[in-house]
Image 1 (cartoon, one colour):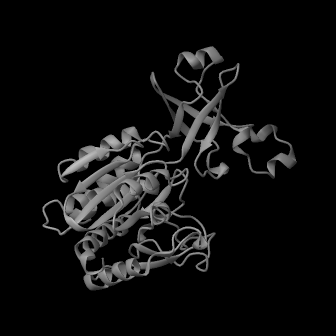
Image 2 (cartoon, rainbow, N blue to C red):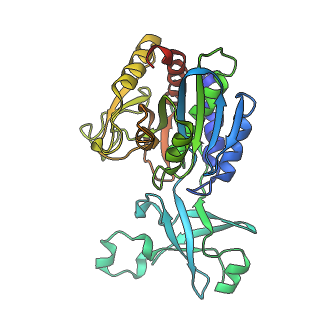
Image 3 (cartoon, rainbow, N blue to C red):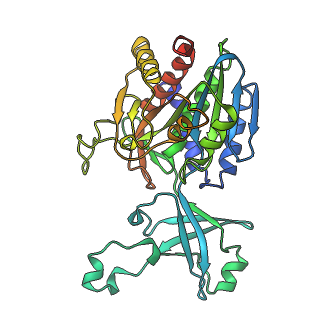
Length: 355
């Protein structure tokens, strides 16, 4: 494992193991702030909660966004027996939630719970054939009553995230929660650290955005305030290299380099600006960085909101292929992660030739 991969692995592990669902990203933001404050000219948190790390320069101004939030849960009702009913925050596939261990982030501290449901042993045959829906699940914190749960700090509005740690697999692969988009966060931190000592013409604004998973909100507000000349989002994308998905659904593969988005969400998201596409492709070719071209009909990123800000901002996406997105066991290649950081650094160095 090379030194670059080791460093970015350490960053990813720190970010993945942290907890911060949409609208509650504070603990993740503090980790990021400590990593970047010594290598940029200015760090600030805007009104909406986005962390903006700026390396000052002249022209053009480049915004690079990676979102801090992860999908999670929120307590909405505690019944008389102390079981917690919850609302989903972000795009969960309900089946991934069954029997997971969670951490509830109360004002009194962390409370551990498990997501329970009706036992299969007492289900009728017809029930066994159906997927369990989130509305039929609950969080069990071990309380014997509503009053006891409330005394523990569990009340409506308390957030919950999955209790999962990153672990290493074979071939520089890792698995963990919230790689979407702590992977992008690890890339952006690495980029800011690498360009710290470089004499660059462009202004670079690294924006760690909030609430991406619930409507690309932080990207929209921060882009309006910064009004950059060009922008990139760094995120994850879905590969088509494992059972259950066809290459015709996604030609992207884990371990084959970062992906450059041409179009996502069937054009309802971002259609990458032609100059941005040329900039990223030509930079990758010139520097010998392997890359893949990504065209999808579902899913989008912060770039979609950024591109529609003010009179329009030329925007694109660099993604890391990640299996099992929006589950507790997301999986990616550390090599892809390191190459994504390399591509962003080189793109910053070459941006003046295109904008």
